Image (cartoon, rainbow, N blue to C red):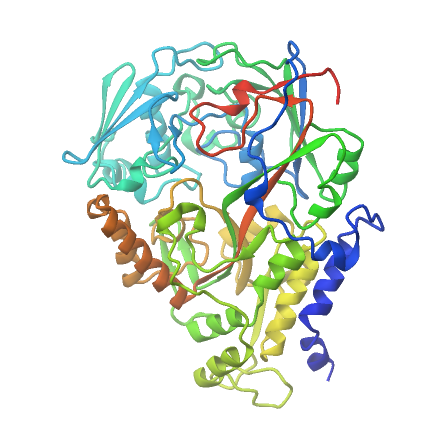
Length: 595
């Protein structure tokens, strides 16, 4: 009887609990309770750059909070980092080779220019003549080639080696130890590298797409074995970069300080120092009220009403390239062969079971009530920020309890013993283990809501480990295919390349669900094919894969995200726009000594 009562707790009561919990322990500056929950926002109304007409001072220190409820790993080279927190800490120092326009297309003007030859299947990377590392050494073609050799090495410990690299002529022979060099990569001059591909595709013209957009300083890693690079000082304690600032003091897992890179190719950075610090979600609003920080990166949107009117700050906003999703564990990763091993007999292999779990949830209400309208129901795995490539014909999964129950009935998941919970198709007890991350005030009530809704359709879902899991431990379990995870709630930042191959392809280590099928691979390959240079065919290819992925439901997108960024009124010359053909951290300044 207790299970039935627990399973029938309504959405309204769960979300009311969340709304009360987000008031900051009684603080009612947002209006509190149900008023705050109904205060929804449209991110399109937010500014994208700071407004400050005051004159900038010389130098100064910028204090930045990175809002997080874990410690960052501290992998400060793009080739080795894995999670978004390390990416946040690398923003002032680690710069991409390329800049992009509003459509995320690579354009000239950055650290390097890119030329793609569709007829000859080549990409040519031309480095700036004045591009130097932060230790004064020139960034050269040898550094670019070295980077590909590291990622392609059989002893490489990172997760970037995927189809974007095996697409390079000679890469697989190099990876397998059959060749000492990558035959398809040639040094044209000290500043020019040409790469021969098996096939080029339009994703290579996207920032963060098929062309690797970073570099490692070869001279700094001299004498270090590839297998030891990830743990080296050159990655964790003293990364050499070509961005506007360089890390000067790192407190592992807690904070990073930066000073200007005197060798930066662009205009001289304006600040004397930047300080980035990890700040828990539970204390960031109080810290803003005390004017402790100039910015708050990764600011939670579930507590937006508690800080939206904080004195001394302006709030920037933008549609995010990220989405939250439910993933279903369907196999394992074969690290030796670098491929997914899908298991058609896994617990979650029946797509009717997965679809039913999707139809049990009301993510429109979740976005409105939990996130103040700054998250909305997601329909496909290509977010709307990518414009016409998002398939608007796919309806996705919205609350439909009757349909969920019918799917389970038809698939043979029946309540055999009359306890209110369904057994599996063989009449055996079915327990589904759900993994979700801890952090913030919303994580627990949201996860509870999911479990309660699944209980309502007769599925016995329990927490993996019995509780929510810390961010780092959560992803460690996913990467290592912990058998105690059947379904999990995760989030992806897709970057600026909409191609899903890097997340859901058969050779992608990021394919955490381990789903693989001949049809999935074929549809992904059409997206990343030369035929897709035709815009009509590219749109058709994206649409076809989104429809297929929605039906298979190996991943169910739940929420599209908008992001907000509180910025102190003393900050000047900073934009949060995607289409900036310069590094915004190089131009940022302050107009007063203190906040």
